[in-house]
Picture 1 (cartoon, rainbow, N blue to C red):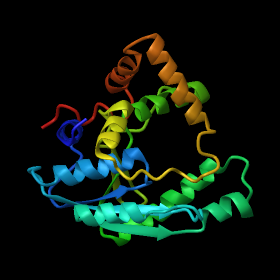
Picture 2 (picture 1 turned 45 degrees about the vertical axis):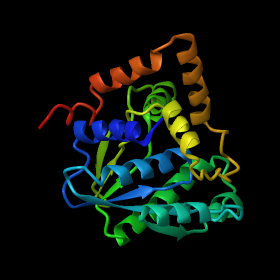
Picture 3 (picture 1 turned 120 degrees about the horizontal axis):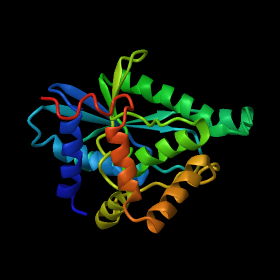
Length: 243
């Protein structure tokens, strides 16, 4: 997939849900994975011609794993002319060594988000872009349905009262397969997660379940996504179609 196609998906999401306004400074949470690097490229490309002027700032929360190498991402940001902040933390040590959490993901996510939000505010950003794509949207709905008994997923745009930050999700119209195609075509410097819990979560189970459902019932993922858009989930029908 070419960058122009990625930016087309992103622009449609940004326009449909009014994600960007003039003067925004948008932080991009860079995990080092394929999704966040695709989002970095897309927003950096979009800002060159989008009618509303905005700036971007890449931020990575370093959890403290010893074998995490961010040098290639630093080089990429320098090449793109994007400010890049690495936040050093001891989250990995706290979660896995001190607390020895049996369910580490919840605590890790809470601490990581806190560190990320602090860095975003310090950089003067008013918005943060998360790299959730269409598969993430549907998988989150399935997680909620299976484990909580409710039809729910995260919204395209969310205002966080406590931090006074607005979360946007510009990749929400992209399939994961398109993200993988873009990353492979452009040889992006993906950094594999060193987390020992990676790939052993409920989300990974639902990820594989959705893949199987879509293989056995072609188009079911898109139908689920349409159900989310047309349902009464907060945030999904509040912006689309409005001037």
